[in-house]
Image 1 (cartoon, rainbow, N blue to C red):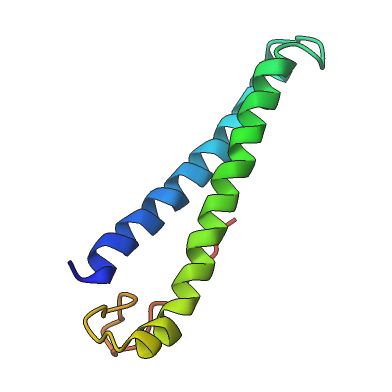
Image 2 (cartoon, one colour; image 1 turned 180 degrees about the vertical axis):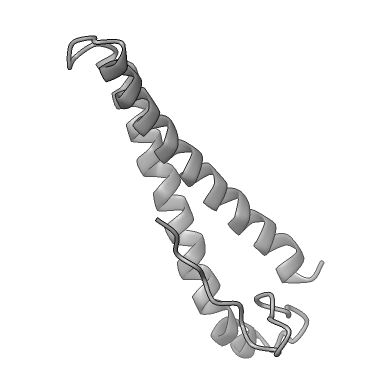
Length: 101
């Protein structure tokens, strides 16, 4: 396997898991307000999901750090068949992230 073929899907899955976990916690808190429940209603479940959300984000951060280490690691190991590291734009440059609010 080319490293990018196995690592980039893992990275994307970690991103999606972290996003879904953040969204789930926010939705639960919002729905508790909409339902006019007390501030402690469902707290044990929300706390459990929040704990998982923290783990999901920590995993995503670990993969992100590993991604940044790949060029040096591959050079150190003499591995050249791991590219493309990142998708390139039409100009052949790494794609820049677009932040939307």
